[in-house]
Length: 175
Image 1: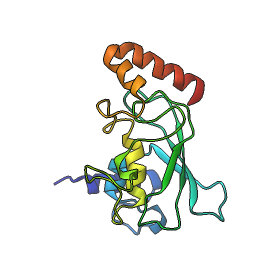
Image 2: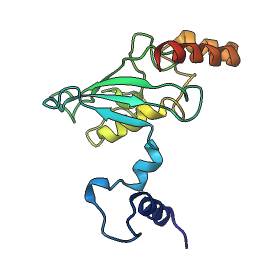
Image 3: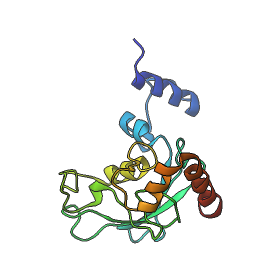
């Protein structure tokens, strides 16, 4: 039976020239879940390698309204992490119902106290934060509970014009 795990192993063997099932380099190990969730659309970088509590994330969606842009986020891990969520701000100007033009982000898992119970918990990880930010451009795009009300109303009024405005923002700010 062909499984996703065996297909990914075989594809990796073709890319690296190693035979499938052969010894693997632990520095190249990536879980199947990670490949499915992030799909290579996120890249982290550390402006100062001595400050691992501060890093940047670039998200380049491969589908949806935002697929041709690259959006940069600044992530700061507070001393009280993992009892409190990291502080995240979008550095790229964007027309998005869940991201304000000033960079604030509406993502429930980043809330320390969430009414719906989906906010931050000590069991959450930075991987969850990266997945959540990536998903803001696809699955978690939420027009019903917006932070940027103008963007959400724009989408409700005229989806094609909304798409055009998103593309204008990408052209000017997210390339």
